[in-house]
Structure formats: C-alpha cells, structure tokens
Image 1 (cartoon, rainbow, N blue to C red):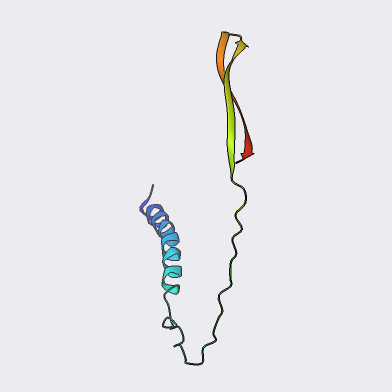
Image 2: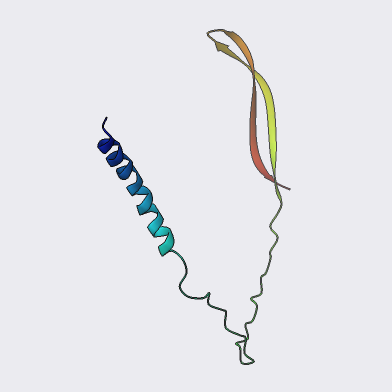
Length: 89
C-alpha cells in the first residue's frame, strides 16, 4: 500500500469518532435545574381515604403425595407424584 492510501484509510476511520463526540457536547444542560415551588400557607388540604379490611376465611393448601411406577425405555422408575387443593380453615 502506498502512503496516500494509508493516510486516506486513517482519515476515514477517524470520521465516525468525530461524529460520536458531537452529540455528547449537545447533551450538556443549558438551563439550571428547576426548583420545586415553595409551599404556601394556602396549600390544599387532602383527606386520607379510609381503607376497610374485611378478613376472609383463611385458606391453606392440602396435599397428598405418593410414589408411582413409571415404565420407561431404560427401565421401570419410581416417580414421586403430588396433588394439592385449597381448603378453608
């Protein structure tokens, strides 16, 4: 390769880097951060909502488990099984 082609390749490889720097500079803030308004004595009074909690009957899971023989191509396997359902207390 000639010196001219090496300089051209180096110049073209630097162009994307120059393009990447420009948006970073454009993102600097131009205004100061806005401060929240100071509370005034005439601020509106908000009433908290009342939340009522009605307890429902407690539920829990009742389960039964057992082992079951399953026939596989490699041989018979003892495999755990479980069935659960919800029950009120």
